[in-house]
Image (cartoon, rainbow, N blue to C red):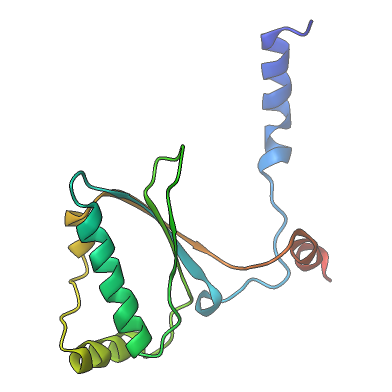
Length: 141
């Protein structure tokens, strides 16, 4: 039986290789990146948070913008909503304001979700892709 110390030493020795990531041959621009938000809804604010997201969806649709994909927690995770926002477009803010005006609604302020969420994490990602495409990008000369 292998000792814990030996296994730990192997892990530490292998750590640089495990975390080293080759550079991508074609780094996507920020305009091609998606924002993934994991949100934990504040106690007692679930319905209000869903209504706020529904308003954003309605305004995005009126503005002709791609909707965010929303996934709801089912079991076992430490988040309630997973939102995947498409890459932003240059005139997105103006289009959202104009659409809200046409609908006669007011867009929530930039920190409105802080009252509805007890926590969140945003990550900027690119994709969708496949492992084969990622390997081709990494090793493409």
